[in-house]
Every structure is written in structure tokens, then in C-alpha cells.
Length: 201
Image 1 (spheres, helix red, strand yellow):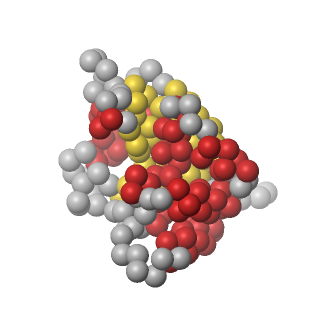
Image 2: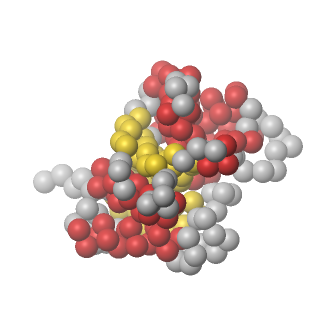
């Protein structure tokens, strides 16, 4: 009997709130656990093209060519990418929408996962502040049987290249939501597979 290959979920979010919108996206790159180190190396290589670079990747600060190279690197190693899209409104604040997006994302992607890496929204890489929403979503997913009881998870900061992948995916999905498909077209041409789900939290 074959043992199923284990997977690592890389999770980050994006939104258009600062531009007056109410769309919130939680994105995930699913990679085989054995491919994670190579993905991290490839993502670092994208940034090393500029030897004077000191800042980690952050989509909103990058030029188009760097965004494109990052998406190509993700497409080459990710089995699949997911983007779950919610809408913030008067009855559903940001944390409620994030929780709903995460729960949906875990139902879709986490059955064979053995680890999750989430970009922290706090300076501390532990269950404090806004990170409590992520903790609650993962615990509830365990209780519902959506993820393995042995699933490990951790928060990472922006210096970890593994969270650059879902940052790029989330921004690609947000652009697509605004009828800008150029990044999705590039991602698919590079072999990427993006699956998008909209929820009503």
C-alpha cells in the first residue's frame, strides 16, 4: 500500500481595503513537502538578480518583471494554488471574513497536508493578536475532520521566502477580481493551476 505524499500549505492574504474596496482574499500554494526547500531557493534566486536588494518580496512594492518571475517560480513548484474570496460588509468584519476564507481553504486543500505555514499578521510568530483567528480556524478544522489531527502549523514573517508564494497568488487573484487577467494568464502559461472560490461568510 502506497503512503500518500505529504503536502505543505503556504498561506497569505490580500485585500483592496486601502483603495476603498471590501474584497478580502486568502490564498494558498500547495507544494509537496519534499519540494519546499527547492521552492524557497527558487524564490530567493528571483530576488538575487538584484545584488543590492535587502528587502523581502512584497507584491505591492515590486516592478512587473519581478512579479512575473515570482509567479513563474511558484508555478514551477506548486501542485495547485487556491484563492478564497470574501466580502467585508456591515455584518461581516475582516476577522470573520478571514476565518470563513481560512475554513474554506482548509476544507479544499488540507486533507493530505502535514504542515501549514501562515504569514503572521503580528510581530510575534505565535498565537497572539490577529493570529488567533488563524489558530481558531485550524483548531475548528481539526475538530471537523477537515485536516489531520497531527497537522503542524506555524506562523512566519516576511523574511521567509515560502510566504512570498501565497502573497503573489493572493495579489494575482485580487487583480483577476478587478478584471485584470494578465498575471493569471502568465501563471497558467508557466504551468500553474489556480482554483478560485468565493464565499459568503
